[in-house]
Image: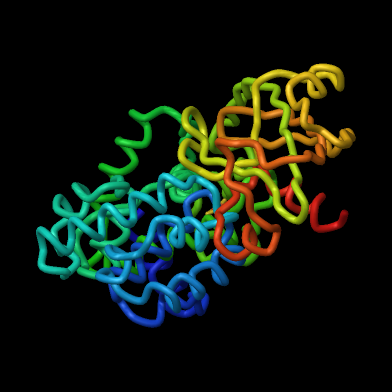
Length: 338
Ligand code: SF4
């Protein structure tokens, strides 16, 4: 494995991709990019990152930003708690560390929204700490190099791999961590697509030498996602639409078009909104979360008066000032095309 460490380092230093957050070793830049990269592809993150840095260039600016503006910048990335935690962590850094990003792994780990992986990435990349950051890509590469037929969804396996990697971390831990991650992203990829023919480890990797690169690590059956059914009411009064903040459950505190559990019939909708002038069925679609699947039905309802308890805003204002979660974007698109 030690030889592989050097090969990964050399490969990374020669081949690393030019990415906006790699222009310097500023922990603020690495932190924001790492949080954005959780569950989102690099290509998709780049414009978000650039927009974020233009609007919020410092930890202080992040600690002071209005939450709705922050969520608007985050719109489309999903997992809005992550954005809220960024602000909470920035406030902690301002209050506890005088606005300077902490250097120690344990201090970084104690910030809101930062787990072991992110703390390991920031402390090794920016401060050369001997810390690892282990995700699915890293575990896949490690298991293949060692030909380990393990269940990488098991937390004990992850802990053991972290422990073993920590023992062999080189001086330049940041480059090694980024190298093994990047190798897993662009060469040692899953689903039978490993590009062993261009991999710097092809002569050392046990799984490849045994022809087992595509069966390692073990495939895990994904659990069925729980289904939930909702109906969305697209209420229009003149050029304004009704929106409100969600008050519970998934996407709590995010803006939505009024939504209720269950599938409503046309007559139920008529009864619910007696001020209707016209009701039409609108779009039906699904939205997939990590553990859930929403089936969404919707009705377009023109009303004769602005019903209380909702905020009534134009489509242009929604676009400019309100962060709509991805689950409601098809409604927004439907209205744009209307
Ligand atoms: S040789 Fe193939 S299986 Fe082994 S690390 Fe490289 S890409 Fe992955």
